[in-house]
Length: 320
Image (tube, rainbow, N blue to C red; front, side):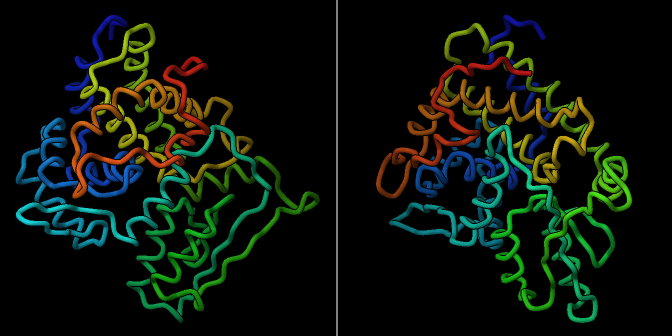
C-alpha cells in the first residue's frame, strides 16, 4: 500500500483481513478499552461503538447476552437502560491476558521450566480436557497427555485456574532446570519446543500480522493525528489480531527460537502503533461511551504502563 493513503482508508481492508467474530471482538474492546476506564458501559453506546466494526445491534445484543452467560459481563438495569460491566472472574481473566499482551519488549528468563503433572486417575476426562485447553491459552506446551510445560508461566494465573477447576490437590506444579552437564543442549531443546508447540504456525501468523499492520505504521509515520474514530478501530483491530496470536505463543526465550523470529518484531510494531494511536483513540472512546454515572472516567494509571510505557504520542523507535 502507498505511504500516502489515509489511515481511515485502511479500515475496510483490515476489517476483511482480520475478520473478527462479534463476541471475541467485544471481549477485546472491554479488555483493551473499557476495563481501564472502570469496566462498565451503557449498552446503547456500546452498540453505536461496535457499529464502527460493521456489527448490527442484534449481533451486539446477542453477544453481550452470551458474555453474561460465560460470566465475562454482568447486566445492571437502571430505568430503561442496561449497563454491562466486567465481573470479578472477568477481571481475573482479563488481568491474566493483559500481563502477556502488554508486556515490555524484553523479559528476563531464569532458565527454569514449569512442569505441570496431571494425575490421570484423579481427574475425570472432561475436566482433564478443559484443564489442558485452558493451560494452552496460558502458553503451556504438551510434552505428553499427562505432562505440560512452560519456560516462564504466570504462576498466579495457573493457581487460579487450578482452584477454579477444583484440581489444585490433583496436579503437581514444579520447576525444572536443565543439567548443563547432562544430555542434550540448545539443539535438543529447540527440537523439543517444536514438538510441544506449533512454532511454524505461530511464525506464519506473526508474519501475516506484520504484513497487515506495517502499512498502518507507514500511513501514520509522517501524518497528523488520524481521525479519532478510525484510530480507535485500527487500535482495536490491531490488539484483537495480536491477542489471538499472542495467547497461543508460549513466549519462549530468544535462544530457543530462530534469529529472525517475527514475534519480537510484531510486539515492537504493536507497541509503536499503540503509542501513536493512543491519544486520538482515547478521545473517541471517552466521547462515545457512557456509564451509569455519565462519561467514562479517566483511564487507570496502569493503562499508561502498557508495553513498558505509552505516554509518547510517537514511538521513538522505528517499527520493525
